[in-house]
Image 1 (cartoon, rainbow, N blue to C red):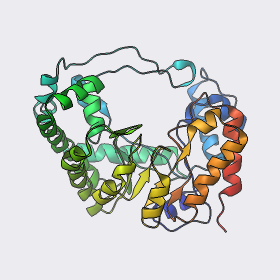
Image 2 (image 1 turned 135 degrees about the vertical axis):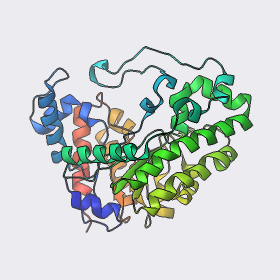
Image 3 (image 1 turned 90 degrees about the horizontal axis):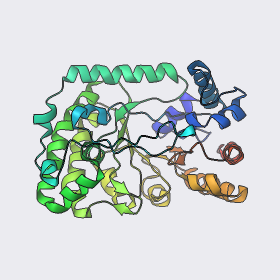
Image 4 (image 1 turned 30 degrees about the horizontal axis):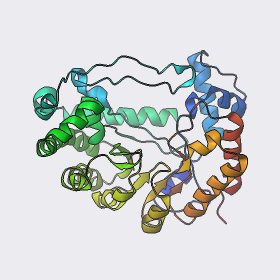
Length: 353
């Protein structure tokens, strides 16, 4: 791991080694054992798991650790539980509970987060962000750490209402749904204002505001209600000198320019979003993290894995803020030999001339 390489890339200073990060390998116990020699299983003691994970970070040269603090737990009794499919090894994250405090679209369209959730104490929020950042730095001191907000806007609405009622409300009365979006944005703004005051140099702003196929809503809705609010969120962060990384799952290619104009310093992207376009338009001005296709690691041949790493490295090599990463994640069912070969090719290609 190298804080220096990660920090240089965040500041567009082009380190000689192309830095990297990955997601979810902390749950791939077989891979951790293969890479580190630490015998770790799903039922291992927490200290053994922690030792194996830390050894993996060092062995695979993590330079950047993705992290947010503010999730839908902030919504308390107004949070919709959509359950959870199996992802982690052993299916330990499966959750079949489904509950929503909202029963019909009118409940959604009438919701006022200021009335239901109330104002937050800015000083307490600032302290929470700083403590989260300090914990992250203590846990992984050899890479670039951060804190941030997961439920920025669309993700916040999903966390509150769940997909079914969210889409029903949006289709029932788009104008009222837009006003609801603005009400939520005005409420979550207090978190961004507190984050701006926190002594934290790098922040993650997450918002899953598109689907695999592209926009959830008509593009005009985004440009009237989403991106103007993004600009309000990010303005105090920029004024405080922070580096702002933005993450969205899905395909946001059609909105890359809008997101850049809102004020982000970097993009974290899945393979569904065009790395080619971001490199061409923003390769010299923005951080770029991604975007090898995890499906190729899951099912592909060695030749296909090499070709995918070569694709990303060829595009990113000339970009001063490029980080290699597999997007979205490397899940625990990824064959160990495929993940090991992916890392082998990365290490072969990571040095700039």
